[in-house]
Image 1 (cartoon, one colour):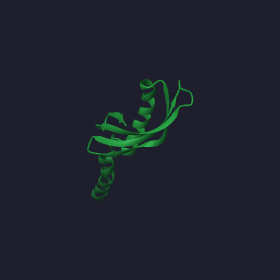
Image 2 (cartoon, one colour):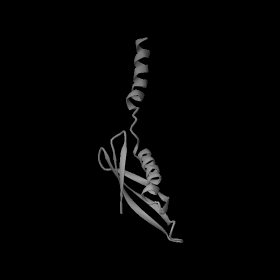
Image 3 (cartoon, helix red, strand yellow):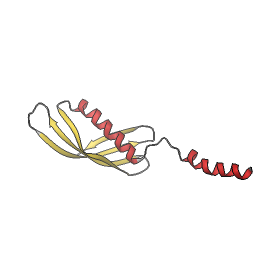
Image 4 (cartoon, helix red, strand yellow):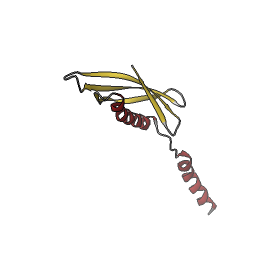
Length: 104
């Protein structure tokens, strides 16, 4: 009986300890990209944004990430003006919430 209990603890313990609510780098990139697309219209209502290359993040240290995203920008009030730009995205993530900043 003791042998089976030890086996159950050895099998279950990694799952209990390994379960974390912290997002992986890939999951964080998807969440940040979604948030960027949701927030940009409020910052630039004159431009429609479309992602042409997904955000890719690289972990810099425990809480900071850096990445790039390519957006197609369609200027609503200036007919026919469309441009594709690649931006650097800086993200700070504490395991619960994140903040991002775009720079060129």
